[in-house]
Image 1 (cartoon, rainbow, N blue to C red):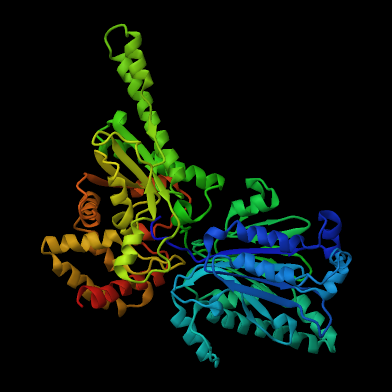
Image 2: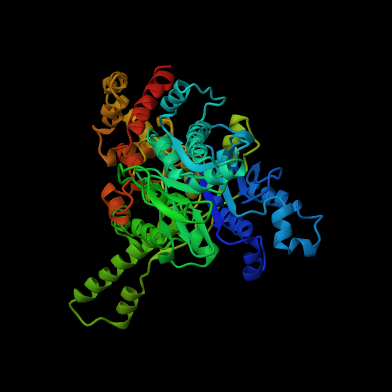
Length: 628
């Protein structure tokens, strides 16, 4: 995908259910949990390279000893930096001490039973270590300490902020993570105080009160009173100082969440193959956390999956399947293959069914599986074409004829090669654009100039800038008869507000093409009317708002928009015929039937907050871009 569209974020958790010396004896190291956390985070490196953080909780520590630990770092090497820092705590420890689980438990930091990790991509533009998860809320009562991380974006932070202020609190930072921490921390305080009152009524004293509280805290109460009013997509993970752990998924099922548990440990991750690879599991071993549910582990290790909120929708993110999640997942691999295979017919039409003079390739690296699917579709077509040709010869075929008919095959090549990021340190516009044109290179000599068509598939086309600045120009160097650019995803028309950095309408090449078509056809009144309608929708209750941005696309067919995109993205001086083929909505749902979240393509947002923000995005575009 061009321009590295990012998702916020990836999470990993592991809760050891046995003492550290058990893991020392069975697995050869008490660091089992720490090591597995590292592996799970590395296996999810694709989900966040702007920063990372980990936290750890030690159970049953004596007063005066630290029991919660946290380490965070920024940058693409954050995971290595974090675990390097943690391991430097052990450099002055003897080999005998390091292999002594009881010594580690007593004296060494990060030698605990609860581990949590997070990988971050910012979708808000906010940078800095203070925005890197996990977030930590401290208190002298163990049970009131709270550490949070998650893969989420909330669409109604302003409303929740006002709720917190109405309770008498005064948050220091305006961000969804911090506000969630404070709101949930406030409810955790109330839950602890509820148990404190109960303990006092039983006439318990001193540490007996503490033990009663820690044994009777119900995280489900905290979650039910904290998460009821949030609008957005989320997979939130947390741990308390007393040893409670939880992972909760949003009630629309937008963001993914998976877990595995056995008699030794419980683990959580954002993706299924991460758990499979880390713990050598079969697909069936890993469970998906259902929408509105939470996996809760008590201090004593008892675990349960509890319904926190009623399920409010069935909107699992289809973009996870197309692009973000690892293609090594069994089902995702099959889905991406299907996405590619379904495009064979429109691509064949685009090259006038001339398979002899068509070369198939892909934009590395996430489009590779869809490329295999497209190739498979071409092979099926060619197989039936050969059968029809042989059956309709009307005479006994000669050996030469058979060789010619049966020898035809699907032509595939690796055409595009992605080079290093050449322009990260460049700020001057012309220099930046010049270097951007060299992000990709091509394999020379694999096409017969002006004879062979070149088909190149990408997982999606979002902004189109890399097509214009680099890909189309460099593919033209091969002098193909025609270039066909294929997207395994449908046209991306609308922003996302649930954890992917696609927030501004004007960034989408499809939206820009629709606006230009309106101008070309002197239909600017529709743009003005849409702006007025957006303003009118703002006055309605959020739940009754309509996404009026959808009206912008109504006058045009997909093919009309496709042709305008080609016109707008064609680099200066490139005269080769170019055609763009997008996945259809029917094809998307046929290939990915269980992930119905398609708001990027249809504008049907699963939550009221998404609809509200999409209308606001058009208002912002109209006032800041269109009418400036």
